Length: 314
Image 1: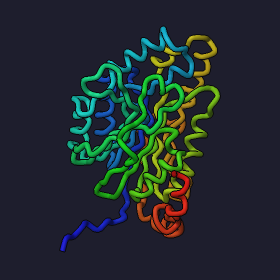
Image 2: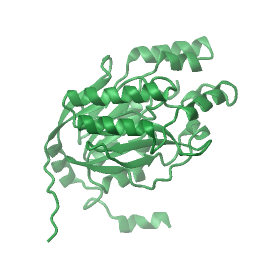
Image 3: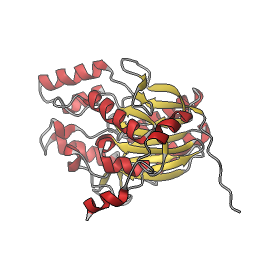
Image 4: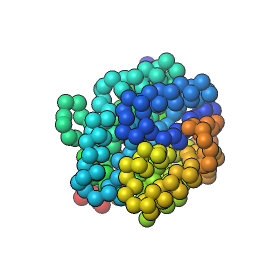
């Protein structure tokens, strides 16, 4: 009879990144990622969660810049500094995970090997053995991202297996998409990585959105949610601040040092890094805390009726 490993709901330590990318520099940001992985592992973490498009930066300039001119020159730099999977930079990051024995979800701006223009907003899943076990490409680019990112083509699957259980992941606005949440739910994650950018624009209170969306997601999935966030760099401000008002706003946002969040299966914040200079938010979580909430509401099992809702998709 075939046997499977019985999952033990143990306590683990997580590291959630709240750092600046090295603006549009793939070599330096990949090196920074490797350093953060080593730091997290040295501090006892089992999993490290990176922000959206951490390598080489989140391409948010279309929220402030018109198409053409400066924006298109930034697009070119973005492509030249984007990550290929497989490729030397992601291989170095996987090796850092292996040598430090830590699993990772890392956000990248991904370009397709051998192409000259197609890019995706992606998360790469890496085990503590240094094995790249999957890539999740954002299902639908959001607003200005559509100028540079193609719709994801890696299917609905957004999770991978670790030695402590399933880890799922989604990017930015996907974390409030009910079908994306359900795609995660069917894998029964104990931890979910929500990757976010540093800001979106003056019209959107980004940290409020991060808290609201991921608290609801953690409550719905009945798992821990790790909210990884980038911070705004001076180089980014120099590149996109066209007016004094733009610069003032971005510098104010940078000074706030909005940070990472860890949210429990009841939707409560149990750790937060706002105002802290540390590039990592470290937290200890007890994975058995997912059991009672899941017994009450299992949206992938007893608390759903997919045969009823199937009519909506005809």
